[in-house]
Image 1: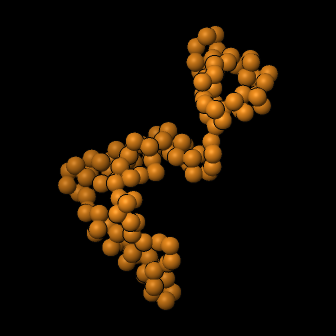
Image 2 (image 1 turned 180 degrees about the vertical axis):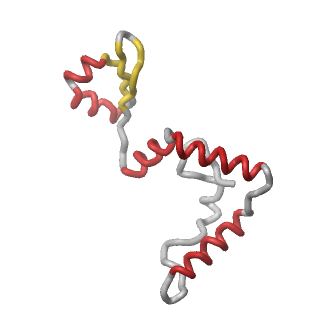
Image 3 (image 1 turned 120 degrees about the vertical axis):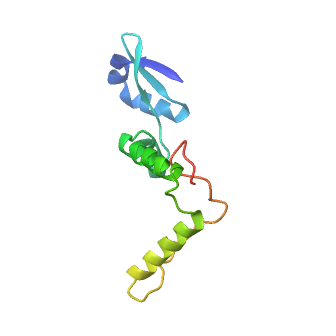
Length: 119
């Protein structure tokens, strides 16, 4: 991990962006950390990073957790039955879209959002 002042990063941004391939770069102002430069590998990684810091998404997930805790949730298999039924009803010929559907059991319990698991 590298540490650099705002002035250093401003003067040599390209080299600090390159440095993010080996780890985060902490940006400081007057000796205090004010930002972090993170390298990303692909669009999926960028999306996960942005969602992990989304206050709006956090509020939605917290509200959903409260509803589930209050007994308002539905079982995993029932959720996917409803999704598949909705997909079939949207298709002109009544068949589900290819590539959509229930994830494998290997995917169950994992979420793309860091720190979250499916219920």
